[in-house]
Amino acid sequence: MSKFVKELVTKEISQRLDGVADLLVVDVAGLDANTAVDVRRNFRKNNINLLVVKKTLARRACEGTSLGPAFTSIEGSAAIVWGGEDIVDLAKQVVKLHEDKKMPKFTAKGGVMDGEALTAEKLVEVSKWPNRSEQLALLVGQILGPGRTLAAQVKGPGAKLASQIKKLGEGDDE
Image 1 (cartoon, rainbow, N blue to C red):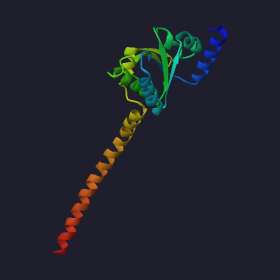
Image 2 (cartoon, rainbow, N blue to C red):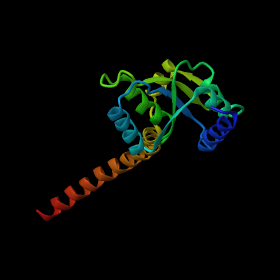
Image 3 (cartoon, one colour):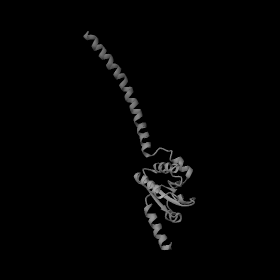
Image 4 (tube, rainbow, N blue to C red):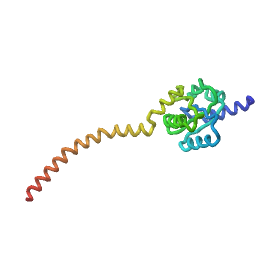
């Protein structure tokens, strides 16, 4: 590959990753064509991008950015994955495919989160965290919990008083 072509490819990778804060590095070498299409289709459904790259060109494209640490210790072939709802959602998708027995050639290698390099082991750990929607559900539950408790405490004595007044009213009718 000529130097000119390498520079063009590096610029293209850099443009595609412009604005990306977190990405993961996987290995898809060895997947047959049908499996690779299934992986891409699954990713596309979840708004996740997959780009097979030459490591040295990707390293050069990400040099000096927060994505740079992703390529420091990567060996062998590489594909980069980014997108999804958040990094946890992305990690869950990648680890699910990594652990799938039908795809032994799909391997999670690591990545970068908030400018910090992730190893494959750390990636599995991140995939066990709650994703954005789960965190929002937890937060809403915590916000509504005290209000729900207060409403029940206010309603309890009021309901008891209303029931006693009703009994008194029924007693007069007899």
